[in-house]
Length: 567
Ligand code: SRM
Ligand code: SF4
Image 1 (cartoon, protein in one colour):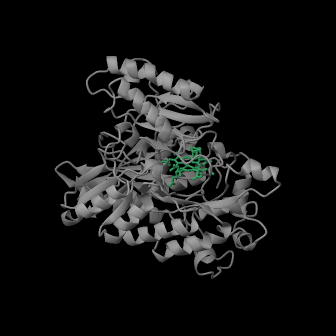
Image 2: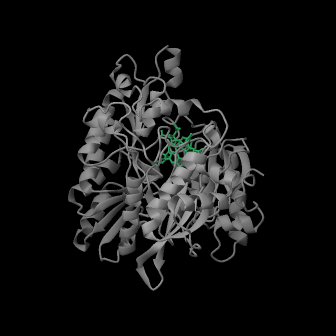
Image 3: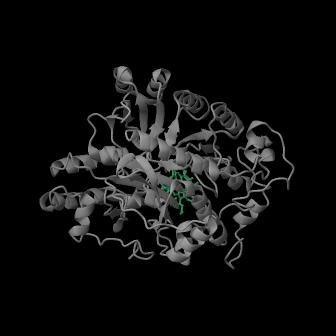
């Protein structure tokens, strides 16, 4: 299936030999002599939703003491659109407390992760989730990941329909192997050779593949950062009626420091399709990447590089051919923001929705802020649903007016409300980074809150306390908190140092650009001090910080060209 002539990477052979994602996982799980999986099974495990990790805070000490690394597993659920019921939440919470070190982590792709699961508990976690119809198939691995969807239910009718499409896309792009059920749930084996993967084939995709659905004017899913994107187009005469979708392809964030052949990229607009064409087009984009994607070099295997290599027109023609669909010209769209709208909003159906602030998505019980306990108490009385946002927050959605007071009181008692926090903190995100992420070069989740306190003080000194500025930090250039779309991006380069990027537009439709390389906190603050002073003095009415730095020539606008990001 590989359209290129490059040698096949070992990952590809491992997938092909895995017998549709079984590998030797059963043996690896049964081996009590090590906390790790056998080589190769760690890659196959990702398709089942989990990553093998070790606690990096303990790594050196354990090495000195000649001990095996402190292996444990991160497990990520598949939760299209981030929606779950209160009953499901109670299970998510219980598993987090009992089997995952007392914590649940909401992610930038609207789902949840557990960290620190011992190998022997993986089956218990997956079975517990299954009891409430949750799964982790495709949470990670070289296939379609969790499908994101605008979570804000205040556009009730349209949102409901669009969310249903997000679920359908997720189901349609699921792998067909029974390996997940066999290994984790019912234990029944299907003999090798009796299975097939009509969509994926035995080597699945060259790389991860991400899909998101946006509902303008909100771009909270950062639709342009996805391999495959759908922008819902409402009927101008009846905004509750869905006409169809603009289809996007070839977005992604990941880069490598110093490697100009890697770059973040906004997706290209392929054109408009009607709802009945969505599944065929989604499958066609996926199989085009399956057959034309790079399989010899994982660094360049994402769809964004395939689109760059083929060119947008050839890529579109191939998708049209496979889907049997001709794209119509895209409809004009305008996005106003890519953050969350905190507090209460009222839906068109009269029900209420409360967006809670969960700093960097980390839920645990802390002194004075018993976040997990608070959400459990809410789940016990709530009759609507919960929606994880693409900004790592949580919406208590569909609250009848008579329950508002009670739910708000519970949220307040447990420190879940956004009241009194600055727009800078409310708009910020950090990826996980240390201690669990093996790729982290610098801290993110554990450091950003303290750095924000200092940035807030700077902003206040320049009269910018009420100003919204989107700040995103990651521990490495993989871009898990989508820092290349932020007005201020901080991307880990070494222990305590970051690249500072400027110039996102506050709605996720423009890439930012490197402004300072490899700087530590003192220089970050000093640089922002000067920039905030200029912004406060010279900004136009209503002008965002990210727009100001471009207009003032502090950075040059990135034109989404492959090489432009690094120049
Ligand atoms: Fe990510 C790898 C965490 C969203 C780009 N990401 C990882 C790993 C699994 C590290 C690893 O390779 O072993 C991180 C696990 C850390 C941990 O201990 O939990 C990790 N990524 C995350 C999460 C949890 C960050 C968060 O703070 O929420 C997000 C989980 C999303 C989910 O629910 O599925 C997360 N990762 C993203 C995003 C944002 C998005 O998808 O909208 C991106 C940028 C978009 C993109 O994919 O281009 C992203 N993660 C990466 C990459 C770079 C991929 C690339 O094309 O170069 C890697 C590394 C890799 O794949 O080799 C990576
Ligand atoms: Fe880890 Fe890098 Fe992703 Fe942060 S951006 S979670 S450090 S891979």
